[in-house]
Image (tube, rainbow, N blue to C red):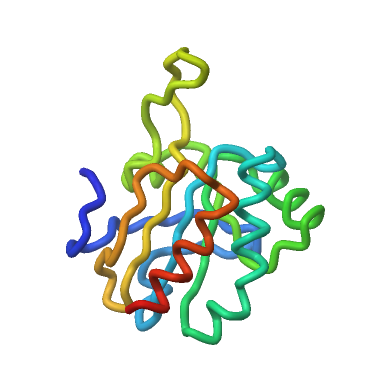
Length: 155
């Protein structure tokens, strides 16, 4: 089922880098940004994650939560968080269930070669669990977090 703006966001249940299990219902009453990224400690993913990290306090002040999701292990997430001092939780989806539910897993082209993998994308969910905005294919990882923040400020 594709993510559709104006409809309920798919539920999820994943382990987080904070040692907790996370579900969509845990964020009821607040807006939630979920960004999906291919791999810890890679260039684009690091730039995107650090940019989200630099605006984290501003997001919290706006009553907005933030989660990053990849198929990487919690151990990998811990190293990534530690290396770049990321202030938010990363969820591990090794079975790619949430990635698929959020249209963030599929065919990708890399230098003309088609592979299956994580599609860099972001979903903004309202306090009632409704998808406000879906960025289905993020091209410029470093600039994207500012795009999301600008969108939030325009609400």
